[in-house]
Length: 115
Ligand code: AMP
Ligand code: ZN
Image 1 (cartoon, rainbow, N blue to C red):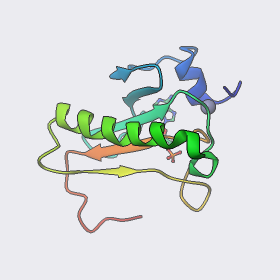
Image 2: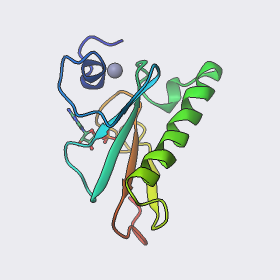
Image 3: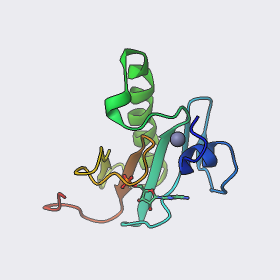
């Protein structure tokens, strides 16, 4: 837990969000500034800055993040049309919130768009 981290605050319910999924390890909620009709953040409850902090013990949680993305994509009706999962890491990766999270983005064509 990081005291001032916005996503840790969401996990602790100190900052409101509208979780669409929550369990012991993960929380998922809509991005505040969606870039597509479906834009969900999948966030591990344990604070890790980004993938650089993920160790052997975190392999399970990383896998759960991917599996949950596919489940949410299905629930949101974009599993068949397709979607993108993105993890921004560090400054050049465009990471703004320093708590590991995965973007699930879909509902429009992202073909030929990278970066
Ligand atoms: P990143 O660039 O990968 O660090 O993305 C951070 C994302 O978090 C951005 O897309 C923001 O719109 C989103 N975001 C920041 N604060 C909140 C919040 N309180 N609730 C939902 N999404 C947020
Ligand atoms: Zn955090």
